[in-house]
Length: 319
Image 1 (cartoon, one colour):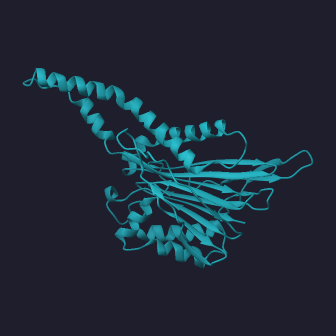
Image 2: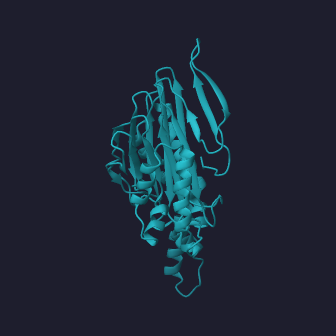
């Protein structure tokens, strides 16, 4: 599911009742994010922003967000995936719907195979996502590969003829393409965050206990490539950290760090903002981060559009 900046988010609030939890859906106040209460008296407040090319608010780009939420007596968790397709703007947009479908299918397959209601495994979700992504593009590439083989044979037989090379050009379009993914699962009963990554390094966490913001320690596997030549044979590694009230987690795509490198900034800039404004609402913290992005040239304001990547942030606050 892609985030849609500028719209008022929906708050899903669960209230315990005599016959089990009753769910009420209502509009959240602008800038207050989406709040999810849980039976463990912990909730996540979430705020999104996406800088797609050629300007903020455009729906063209290769970043996407997927999520699932489970609420039941004694079971409360949320799964979030942030993905970044190689390429910029329209080039990456051409693959986004396929990646979106593949990731959603992977999540559905996992949940169907694990109906217990326990929090999902990010590592297993990414493993299924990799298989689905490769399956989608294998099906797309198969006819081009056959036509390319036929064209190569014809070239040997008729070297003087000018032959159609459209299949080869189509294969080149997919060559070397990949997607990075980070999957995080919040267990709101145990107050834990479990995460795994395929080429997506940036997960920042503010610890209310330590009063510091730092990248989460993670083992980052390589990105998921569209073709079958490269795959994560050893799977994905997940890690779990305890969460406390007031903790903040920020998912980022590498478009943000591309901008930082051009402006000679680092993730420490974001870390300092989160640490300094940790007591404010998710909406206010996100506005501060967006201000940094605007100043750095998000959406191509300061740089050639071909040099600027899509940039996406999703901010969580445990309350």
